Image (tube, rainbow, N blue to C red; front, side, top):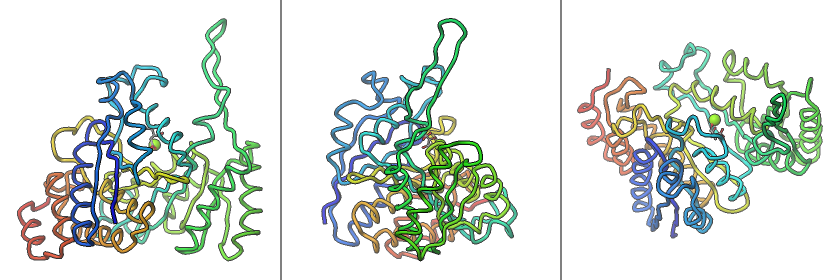
Length: 368
Ligand code: IPM
Ligand code: MG
């Protein structure tokens, strides 16, 4: 099979981690006799500097024409004082909308070897394995009217809008995923205050009863869900929610796993899928070669599964990541001393089943 991928490494550590994800993709393609064709586009702050636009038309065309898009990270402190309309993040929001990737999948899994890195006690966090399904192209992020009015007393408005169709299609993704897992969907809303939540709850309930009677559905208010995520994370299987709620709760869920650097994401729609690690551009450590590449590598695994239907290949990558972690190779976020490329190489080594090499590499980068 030919895998045509567009790379948008973007800002900060995006370049470093994407490079390692590509190295792992090359290794897995070699092992399974696929061919990998990549094209790279400018994106984010670097694209603003080069062209004035965080998502230049050439990059968008490259993204739309690929089998899948692998993104690194976007954002830079230089743009912090710029208005939202002009910032690098706007490029990401436009890319999501243009690719129509309405379903954002953010797994939060606590690897056994990393339990002690979680801010939660091991007895609470161990066995955590959930996936947040975040609606990505609607809700508060995109609703109109929006904007600040400055004539007279300043005022501001944002709008949280959803249609039944939008709620149904994201809920369907969650129910279908749950069928492949522990068959529990937690739908998150704020129905005790917002009409938006009332309709959300009604539509999800009706869809569940009609199309997914075999999946258990429960509802949680977003505030108490935030609490349950840290008091009893193990109870969750698949969670589904509005865009902004998903933005907030997925950051909360991400730290459970020990480091945000570990977490992948997939954004899916009808056509080209978009894959990106959950972490940001981390300007404080950019260019130092110490960023954790595992979130990007696991995003590449999700790409193999969801965009190319290559389950065995995806599993091989995830298994190699687990082996690399178990061998003790860690970047600084996990109190290790290994570099970004050493961790990437450890995954490649584990993929090719060279256990003794992996052990040697682990000894070289002895962790603290
Ligand atoms: C995320 C990020 C983005 C978002 C930003 C960078 C626009 O926080 O992917 O969660 O808010 O969606
Ligand atoms: Mg976020």
